[in-house]
Amino acid sequence: MQTRRIARELALLAISQLPSKLDPKAETGGAQDLSEILASAVKTLQTEAREALERAGGSLQRGNDRLNKTEMLEESIQAGDAKQAIALVREAIEQTQSAIERVGMAIDFPVLLQSAEQPELRAFALELIEAVMKYRDDVDEYLDGVMQDWHISRLARIDADILRLATVELRYVGTPDRVAINEAVELAKRYSDEESYRFVNGVLRRVVDAQKSAQRAARKAARDKS
Image: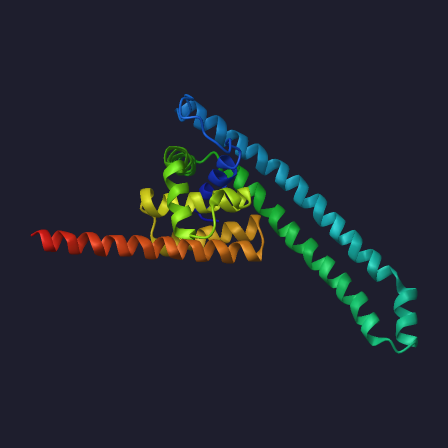
């Protein structure tokens, strides 16, 4: 896994633990505060790993239960009810596939945990956390304008934080458009659902388009002035 991708994931887990409303008078954002936030994110990863394995075990058990219902399967076949037989097998396969996906996710966690101590990774993760904390109000207002009929406060917290993180990268960190969008989509796929990652992709493309329009307008204004 790429160092910056891991850093983004840690940063996302960290900012998701911040209060929904940041107190501007609170003395946060120092190196010690940020390190503590990052350490908390690492602990969250450890919990996620255990839960992923537990969910995988549950999915395997449910799949096994479906396959063990041989009497229902045999009765369906003997009765000529092919749809019922197919449905039983399909459910077992789906549960097994779900278990495999969850195990695959759990396998990634030790890599994340081991990599979390790399100086380069920590530095980038801390940079992202600090930027989100610093610009979150501005980013939220900007995203509300881009989404038009939606408000970031109405989104699921994880989706809102993915959008905040990516927008900070696009507007303040200087991450290339394609990279920021792709990484945000991957995070949404990992921590949210299909509907959410499509939504994240659409919003961030609007962000990029809005930025490009603003840049063109600025260049035109500069030419007109000269």
